[in-house]
Image (tube, rainbow, N blue to C red; front, side, top):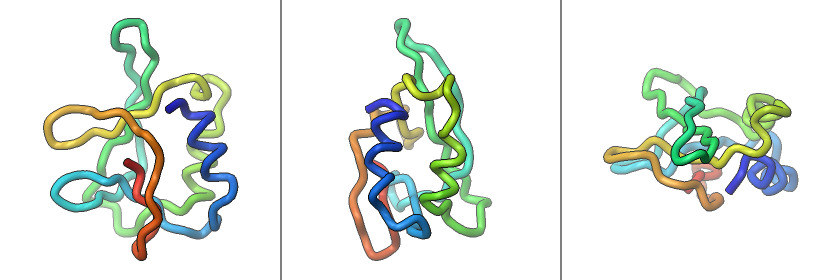
Length: 99
């Protein structure tokens, strides 16, 4: 999934909903990403931040990603072993889990 696809999916969601990463063993809060290129594929990798007190809100994530140079990057999640591709999100009681 590209950044532009994620932004399109988030457009219909509650702007104040929490957004977390679906990481193992528990969901993670995050507030930053790393830009990389692997095999000529531009990637944006969300980095968990256990120090963050509150989860990002949908509107905050939209602001973070709404940059023209990020739109065509593929989205990944930094997990225990290695980054894995983002395919969407699941609505849970705690918020939206990016997975």
